[in-house]
Length: 476
Image (tube, rainbow, N blue to C red; front, side, top):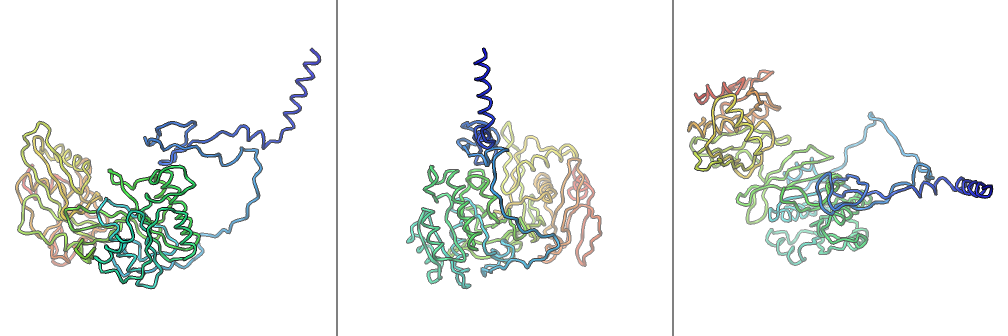
């Protein structure tokens, strides 16, 4: 018994002499992280419980060996106050006014830009035109294509009349070779088309996988910040319209642009959904022609150019896109449905918002849409996201249902609450000025807290949706 007690004491003494960092290392456990949403898990599984992604969970080594681990002494960072003034970052203008507007005034050095859009919408055409325009302004520009051969890119450049542009062209997917070339050449702007085709030999997965996209984006963004080179990444989109790959890529870059449009329309919208160097939700409007993308200086006039005589279901909405007022036509069609469940078809608007407005019209105004098919569309391939379009949608639905056309010289805007009340929206004066500039003489809008008077312009202020139904359409 005595010898056993001595043995236990010796074991306890040996354990006590083990350094704290080694005991902490023995307790360190691996961490499993979802590459799509960043959620952490205690163990690996095939599907992430947070975002529902499949095969997105990978094992990552812990950042430290534990609370008792020894950490190397770091250097002290430089601190400043909010009152310290710094000059704004220098910008390089491309010469394409619509592109410069979306970028916030031009291209910022050492910035990383992610451009997404549907297949065939014109992303490569836009960026080839942009890189040729930047190169004409004395910037050293590289265009690296991972999807097409160099001969295919030259054919597109010849069709666009850009064969003489001083752009350095390359066709490669090995990111190690690309970065080695860029380190030697030191360009000012690099376009990577696309990030899904790039691959790193240090990552054990196929090109286009979540791990490869994240690693490739990290290397390119790090290169941009380290060398002061602007990098533009082209990204594919999923069927839901989101950029494919992990969401962390959108957090890495400085600017995220979406190139939108319908293939049946000639208009294309370049929209900024994130911009660290300018306003978000800014848009640039282009028109697809045989010679490439042409800028549209006055989008409102172009979107309304095909309006003819007054027609039921047609309403002009005075909206705001970023900092730009823009008039678009909202069209509605209401017809008896032969189906047990009527159809609700929406193009260019939020379908959930349509359901809400239909419910408000029925519950607050007593106008049913049961047994009727409803079709809603924004003319020209435009997409409208702001709540100020609620009143225009309601007026289009009422106009189509009652077969009453609104006057050609009237614009509509305003937000509808669930009680049926109309809420004022921002930048009312800019909306009215844009409408007056294009020849409109009247507007239907909510009551304004600050009176706005304009010569030769009639503003019809409405308190709620019931008032609009009674005064404008004589229904209810």
